[in-house]
Length: 83
Image (tube, rainbow, N blue to C red):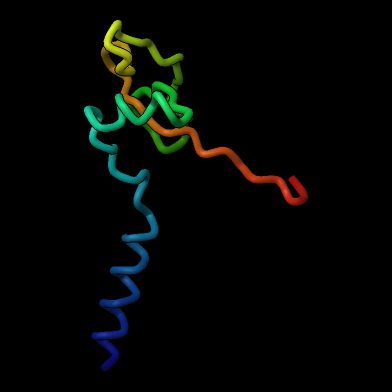
């Protein structure tokens, strides 16, 4: 019983330490960025440093893309109470 509780606690602790959610499929996101706000984000190198961001570039086909070393990410806007 005690070993099971310790194992579950350890698994929850490790799951809570995940650094970031998985990166969305870049091909699908390139089209989705036409309708939702996106940004280019550099790969995270340290948990103590905020990754660099860049503006989204656009192909003549209308698909979004980023420079090498960056990936597309949806921008999550905070909803303020009362707005």
